[in-house]
Length: 500
Image (cartoon, rainbow, N blue to C red; front, side):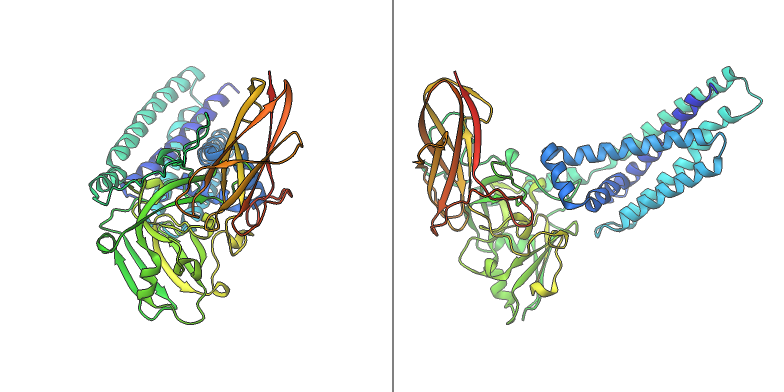
C-alpha cells in the first residue's frame, strides 16, 4: 500500500520525538543518566568481557560514541517498524513502546547514581511516543481519506512535530547549565599551578617520538561512563570509613588546605596491549593518601580499600600500596592545572605501580577500608585479577609499524616502563640478529616511563625490529604473548618496516 513508507516515517519521527524529549527532560532536571546513555551503558556491561575487549581494540576511544549511535539507530529502526505495525496491529505497536520504556527504566535504575529525574525522563519519552504516534498516524490510517489528502495532512503534522521537538531540545540544551557551572567553578580554583620541571635529558632526540610529558588533551581516557560526573568543588566530599578507628569526611577545602605534594607518575591501563598507547605520563599534585589513612587508623586485618566513584564505579586497592612510601595521592592537579573534568575533577586517585582498574578512581567520593575477601569491585567480578601490579613493558615508536625509511643508519626509539620498580636496561634486535643495548633518557624516579634510543644500519628491503626491557629487579620481559585479561598483556613488541 502506498502509505507504508509514510507510516514508517511517522514511526521514525515518533521515535526521535521521544528520544529528544526524554533527553531534554534529563537536561532540565540535571539527571545524570539520560535513557539512551543508560541503555547503551547496559549493553556495554552485559557484553561478555572478551567481546567488549575485542571491540575496544578495533574502535579505540570511539567505542562510546559508536555504541550510543548504534543504540539510536536500532531504536529508530524499531520505531519505524512500529509505525508500519500501527496500520494492522495498533495494540502490538503500543506494546513495543511499553517494552522499550521498560528497557529504558531498567537501564536507568541499575545505575547507582540515577535519580528520580532519570526515571521521569523515561516516562516523558514513553508518553511522547504514544501521543505522537497517534497524532502522526491518524491521517494515514483514516479509511475515508484519499492518499493525497492523507499525505498532505501527515506532512503538516510531521512539520509541527519537528518544530515542537526541536524547540524542546533547544530549551533543554540551553537550560543545561551544569557542565558550564562546573567548568566555571574549575576555572576559579586556585591551586599550586606547578607543572613539574621535565628532567634534563628525559626527552631523547629521536624525531617522531612522543613527548616524555603527555599533554592533558592527549592523555588516554578509559572509564565506564558515557558522560563524566559533574561535581562542583563546593559539593564534593570524601568519606573514609570501614575498618578504621576514626571515620573521616573531607571536603575539597579540607584537601586544598592540607600539605600538598607533587610527583611524576606514569599511568597505564590494564587493557593496553603490547605496543599499545593506553599509557601516559604527567605531573600530578595533591595530598598523600597515606597521611589521610594514618588519621583514619586502619584496624588490624584490613588489607584492601574499596574506592568508589561518583558514578558508582568501584575498585579494590591493596591497603599496603596506599600506605607505603610511594606517591599514592588524592590528586587535585594534572600538569599544573586543576584536574580536567574527563580525568576526574575535582579529585581522583593516583597510585604508582598499579593498573588503573585497581587504583585510579576518577571522581572519587568514598574510601572503605576493608578486606579483599569482603569486597566485590567492578572489574574483578567480571573476570579480572584482584591485584593489578603494572607489568614491565616496552614499546617501539620510531620507526612506525609499516613505514618506509631510507636505507643506511636509522634512528630507532620508544618508551619502556615498570612503574615503582624502574627500568634498568632496554635492548632492541633487528631481523633476529644480536641484541643491542639502547641509550636511556633521564627519569626523576622509579614511577615514570623512560625513553630509549638507538641506531641500526639497514640494507634495502623489509625488516623486523623487536624490543625488550629489563627492570631493576632483574626481570627481563618474556617473549610469550598473552592477552590483557586477566591482569595485563605480556610479550615483546615488534614492528615491520621497509627500507628504500
